[in-house]
Amino acid sequence: MAPFKSGFISILGRPNVGKSTLFNWIIGEKIAIVTERPQTTRNRILGIKNVEGGQLIFLDTPGIHEGRSELNRRMVQTAIASSWDADILLFMIEALSPLVEEDRRMVNSLKGSRGLPFLVINKIDLVRKERLLPLMDQYQKLHPFKKIIPVSAVTGEGMEVLLEEILNFLPESPPYYPEEIFTDQTERSIVTEMIREKVIRQTYQEVPHSSAVTIESFKEHPEKNLVVIQGTIHVEKDSQKKILIGKGGQRLKKIGETARKEIEAFLGKRVFLELWVKVERDWTRDPRALDELGYL
Image (cartoon, rainbow, N blue to C red; front, top):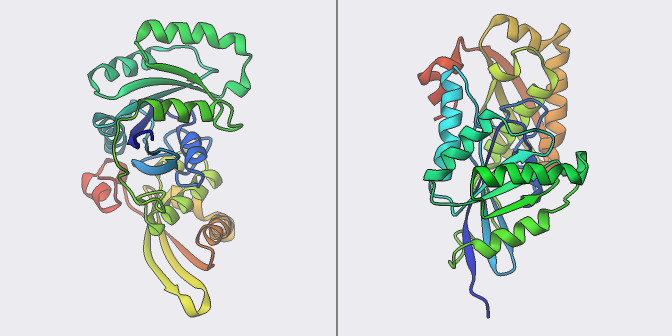
């Protein structure tokens, strides 16, 4: 009988290469929020994939980028720290993009990590296959990747191959988590991110990058199959608050309606959701405010 394997896999890469989409596809649940905007993921998110003969523990991380705010610095630090103790590093790029200097710097940063480096080329459904070989050759010359695996996190192409190769290289170990657990995120934290996703999708200009969500109250009423949730959306400026609320409160109402439907599907219960908007001036640059909002 083959030995059981278990280990940690960190997903790294620039913003918007599809890390959270790949993460959600593998886990089979929507744990990480996904939008068209860069820097959507702000915290390290853990997801667990149990397969025959192994347990694969994935870490979705913020996109590595240059930014001036304290929030940006903490996001990048979170991504880098998640790679330190990982058994495998999935460095993710997209097939549409040529090798750029930012990618070179990130690949060079892998050299000090103990994890085995895999190159994952995402979005192969959007390019002709002959374009992949030159890209693969460029990256292989840049760094001795253990494996180079083209995938599409949208169609699922190549994903089973990726999982098989990860399992092949994981160390022998008993499982770290019970089989029924698929994430270390609480229901409350997942709901918080679902609301923030709707804020990002419904707003524009600087509002998505200047908004955060906190849950003030999360009360379950089992006899009514009901959860009552009260949340606050934090922004940095009065003008952002005005954009978020919208004319006659219509935008905030739309955010609440779309978030409530998704939360109900996730919890399997009826949900009453109440949202407020609060101005927290320059919170993305204030270490104390970031601590209070959970961006440690």
